[in-house]
Length: 218
Image (cartoon, rainbow, N blue to C red):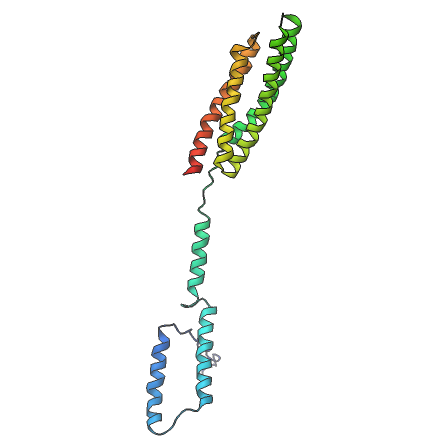
């Protein structure tokens, strides 16, 4: 006598596809056709029960990601893939230059102010030219602060308007630094070194600002 191996596993019921529903319906119609010819008709209750079973089968297919419910998931995946492909246009080198320029200008402002005071005490510095140099130095400080604020804001938010305004102010502050390099009343070697370094920073920033604005506009 063979040992009992247990009951066989229950059959797996597969979810009917959308294409198979019309074939089953036609098969059911062919099966019920002889019964109808023999004079046996289905009652309204049986028709409602059959329709409810078909609706439940369709809902089960959609819940399990069948052919009718797979389109929404595909669209959501495509949307996620499209949203992840956005490019960041902000310039990291330009942002680093803004930070470096802000720190350097604080040193430049203090050093130039101290040297103007020193030159007014040691050398013959006409009062009118002294007032002019001090006014231009403080004006340059105000413009530099506005320039760095607009440049940082425009670069981080990828807005060409504030960055273009910062570029115009960069040209203005570069002209003022050229004044302290070449045209102020008394120019020491320290003035030349500090103003030349500031001019180099402004020139490099202007180039990167033009590149960033071109990238934002496209």
